Amino acid sequence: MQKMGILTDNFILLNQSDQFSEKRIIDLLSGDDTIVKCDSANIARYAKHAVRENNVHMNGVKDVCRGLITELDGCKSEQQILEEIVRVLKLKRTKAPRKPQRVILLGPPGSQTEQQAVKIAEKYKLVYVQVTQMLKDAIRREGDTPLAQDLATKLHNNEPCKF
View 1 (cartoon, rainbow, N blue to C red):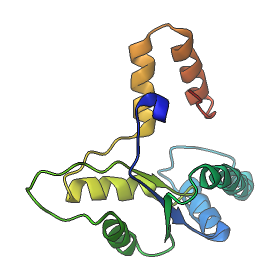
View 2 (view 1 turned 90 degrees about the horizontal axis):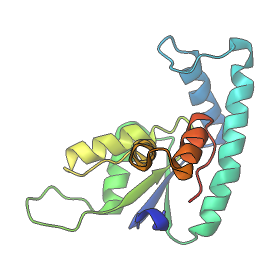
View 3 (view 1 turned 45 degrees about the vertical axis):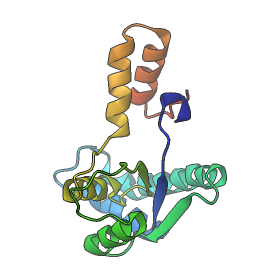
């Protein structure tokens, strides 16, 4: 992230039990409006695999960012989570100039980090940046360079992007 010029002020991790995450993923994949269509007989297996993979990656993130991550209970209601994030970030509605905070909101699959980020951005007049969109913009800017082609391939295959 530092190579991309992204320096964060806060990392917030929404913790959930593995069972809670698996249930949320199953509910999301089983819904009629799901974007990802998959074999219904394997949804539970996919959910378990997604949670296990997230746990492996999150352990690495916690190790690298030791002492910089604030962990919150992601099993609470959406409103309670929003209030805790606001408390951690010490956000206030004000028209006074202020240095914008750079926050990365993390969580396991199904933890609704994107929805929480959008709500906080709207309520407190902050800028919401979606990492996937940043990568797509970088691919567009770079054109036909090897970096752009590598990023596009990794993004398409849901592989981690390293800089």
